[in-house]
Length: 123
Image (cartoon, rainbow, N blue to C red; front, side, top):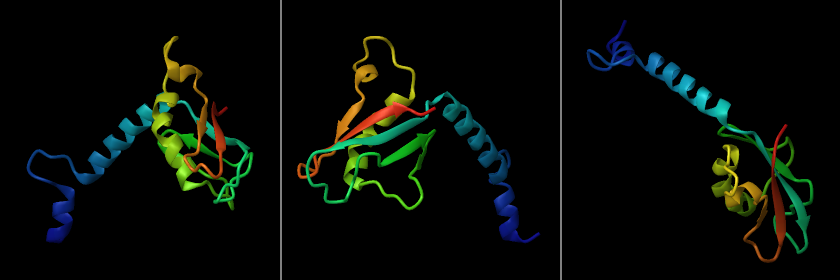
């Protein structure tokens, strides 16, 4: 075993190997993601001229911390940017009276498009 291989196995005398740390990190992420709701963000209405060509029905799915856009489809970066700050809260259980519990619509910040999106729980 070469010097480079040894350093990848051990970092200091009492530090776990890189493989062990990655495995523990994957388990931690898996337990967090199992508590998160899967969401779908769907374009509900386009009442202007969207410069990126968004149409009703365009969508993406959020599972845990991973974003999925259907094959051969796209999702506008600006519309995505408007949705992203709300998604972590919408993935978790919300108490009664929390304004986020009843907030399901987002509007794209591009005033020319007037694209309205809906956040919904994904089956």
